[in-house]
Image (tube, rainbow, N blue to C red; front, side, top):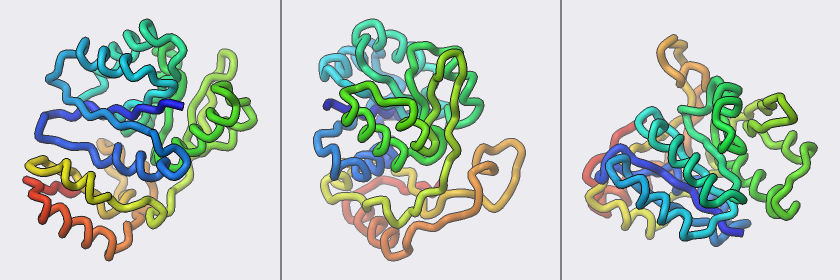
Length: 231
């Protein structure tokens, strides 16, 4: 099964740790999972051609405010050239008002709302065990998954992930980040309730293990990462 996870970064100098965490979390069961990092200044037709050439069974897009307007037409074009590919959107931009996204954009098959690591892994397991057609009863057990059921949109409840279960960055990943800008998180969630910020609905603050992020930050510095920006 060919799975490709795609990030469209805001600039060439930016990077996506989210893709790397998703890949590492799913890698024990899906060692051939691929990631594809582009940026919003690239030619969309070239991105589409690269993606289609991989002949993917499943494609997941990491959606943010800076790339959603490019991802949506890309998804529509991908549906035309790869009609059998299952398309998943995840990330902050599509984790809220989920009914809007699935009702308006028919080329999108599924959303993953909130934290994606466990939800993506379980979805891929259900997909692979069912020859590409997971049963509704199996989809219903995947926290954070959003899908269609007839004319209705079903949004499974989200469940906070134990951050200690997310594998740390590999040396190979860190080497790829030389001269890049890294957006790094030591926690998830927020204690505040600011009306203008999506983080206010993410629940209580959870911390990555201190020893883990201290080691990762030291490795990033040694690898020549240009900037680390905490989010």
